[in-house]
Image 1 (cartoon, rainbow, N blue to C red):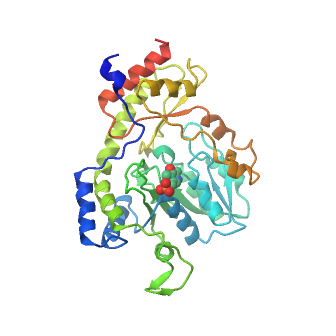
Image 2: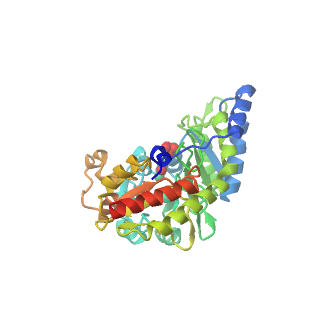
Image 3: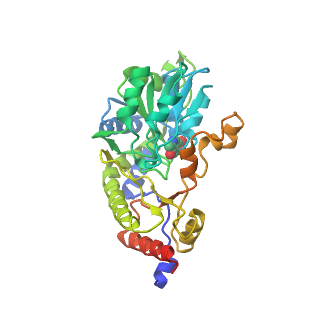
Length: 375
Ligand SMILES: *Cc1c(COP(=O)(O)O)cnc(C)c1O
């Protein structure tokens, strides 16, 4: 291993901000129109067109996008909403925000996504909606989920926070369910610093989301309903418009990196590379391997060893949501969703983002091979 390699650090995430983003932000700053305005409107139009929906509503983060979508659908106390426990906490907390009850369905351990058979088992006469999460950028099994939703008259809110540009049977995620919710946090596939977006083909949801986003005003200082300030700034939107133009290029680099890693990791005993369903386009937000008992190091030892070699890793997610103190205090059963619990002990995310070069990939593979053979 060369000296250079010893000093190299490959971060697990890296927002890519170029001169174009900087120029766009400066243009807005100089205009004096900083809060929600024309830039936000343009970003919404361009994002809706990219996803292939009629409408998009920009908001201040992805958590708020989920919250607003559920408010538009009038999810309220007494209602149940089914989601996965193997995701970021916001996917379930948005249900608690409404005073409704999150009900957890287990996952398919190959794709890490919610298992449609488990959804069916969890449906009651109080169930109002399903929130599938396209985890790590791999689309959830939307055909089966939409069929269940139609049979039981349920709404489907897609959590697309990790899946900008991912496709399911040729359709972009965020265009399949009742509504889609995106995040533009700095670690996501594109960023506005903080930001979020709701996508939908339903004009009623669109109108209501716009109303709720801005104090329930139908015109200035005329408030029809209880609304919020969930607006995006023109500064954030200007960044987002530039990032959206670069997204396809970045997705291609993520895919290139992922394909090489899969082919190499497949040959290492004890490591399971991510699985990709043949009918999806993966957005490769995270590249997540499973470390099994057949590998000479535990998952945590491997993470530590990689860190010592300058390769940053992360665990998405070390604890399923129903095991979090917040949910344990609400009385959730520690033993439900065994697949999610099992997988949370095996997963390890490796760098795959567009700033990871072919040289970095070679170095990562070489390091993994050495650790596997104890050299
Ligand atoms: C990031 C994320 C969110 C929340 O988005 P924020 O913009 O951070 O509020 C929601 N769901 C999932 C799956 C996420 O990864």
